Image (cartoon, rainbow, N blue to C red):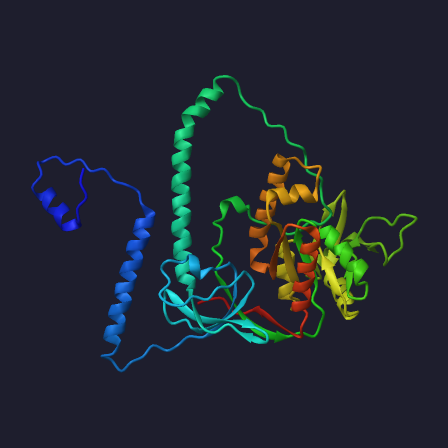
Length: 391
């Protein structure tokens, strides 16, 4: 075995016998470096030829919200000074004419990060697709190696899985949804946004762990700023309940079904034969009192809020580690905590298009303080809302 450049290797092959055995090595990192080198050579050629023509490329500018974290120090292919950003940051892209790299600056009130280079939408999508292909390839390879071991285990009997039935929730989405398993997960890059002036107090949607505790603490600490949304139901009122205080009790099921069809509810469903729903009117009633209406709703409900001109502050609470979950709930063992952590990651994927911020912490007090900081920062009269998608 010897190492040779392509010219010498070609000569060796030409002088070889009729039969040549080739051993191929799968090396995606080497290919990515080769691809980056080709791109750099192409850019040099474009720059050199651009001096010979009078036609110039028109700069494309736009404002975007980042849907991922980017650390330029970890990007080996970066052609110039990079701009670091986190999920949820607003970026002013001053030049998006290049297919690979954009020029941008972060929009931070009271400061200026200066211009930097960020990867384009196309570049992020292409690299992520390549990464996913590599993951699937390695997964299939691991499955092939483990198939014989699984067959051996099956000879000694079938393993039975015991699952605990999950408790039904009253917060149901009445609209049908396609099974996620059959859909290709979208690659999150940037969301085009525009600035809009608000005439209302934004609702608050908390997602993930500690959301009940944080909601309760916010209402206790700031009763003049936060309130829960009162749901509607067709369930009969109990003797100790008060209409308009415990629920909005609806006497006619038919009427509530018609209101759901008319789009007056952002989320509705059935539980134990009774309808439950969160109405737009209830949310607006809280907002009219200059309070943040705290909601526990699905991504579809957030989409319906946006369609009705309401843009909630949506915050995902993410534990720093699996050990963090055990510290928050000491009744969980490591296996149970790992499952909770994985479920939280699935929530992050489900809500990714609608998250205002992701709060990661180790201490509950630290998380609560960070959630409040996000809310205060997002409570100005002007916010960035989704615009038309990329063409």
